[in-house]
Amino acid sequence: MSIAIGGFIGQGDPLTLIDYLKTMDVGDLTVYENDAGYRDRGTVELVNQGKVKKIVASHVGTTPDIAKAMNEGRLEVEATPQGTLAEMLRCGGAGLGGFLTPTGIGTIAEEGKQIVELNGRPFILVPAARCDIALVRAHRGDTWGNLIFRGTSRNFNVPAAMCADYVIAEVENLYTMGELDPEAIHTSGIFVDAVVRANVSYCTVRDEPLEAAARSK
Image (tube, rainbow, N blue to C red; front, side, top):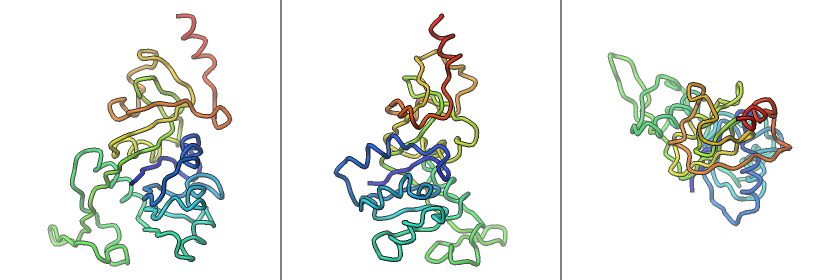
């Protein structure tokens, strides 16, 4: 199966869901992610368990065990420019077949790819990425899957939530439908299939004032 995972070098990584995935009897996974976590935490843990056969990522330099697994032939790593990867996921969610990008022309990134010339300029034709599952993390969310990300943790969580057939969101602060400002929503609940509470030890900031206000309504 293919899994899109949100986060950016540990910021916004769905660690609660990754921890649960570590307990499951799964293997041969293909993961689409900006990176593979940070140091020994995140998707790299699944790699060390032998559950992942391929990672499509922008870089894996912050996870030494990934380089080790790749050099030992236990893991295939497909390096993809960061903007290209984000657009692959976004196009998968938008129902598009792919897109044209000049990024990578004249480099190894164009090897094996279809080149399209438009107005005298070469572009790489990049297929959209459509995944079976997506794991994302939000700071706030409601039981209908409407999500709000905190600061830079929006990163790859947004396109990851768009590109999969089944999306699971772990949420630090969970609300009922109608308690969140609809104008503040970053990802609509129409993309999300399941919501779980994030492990409290992984929460960045608790919404005590908002929770108190909600209880007083």
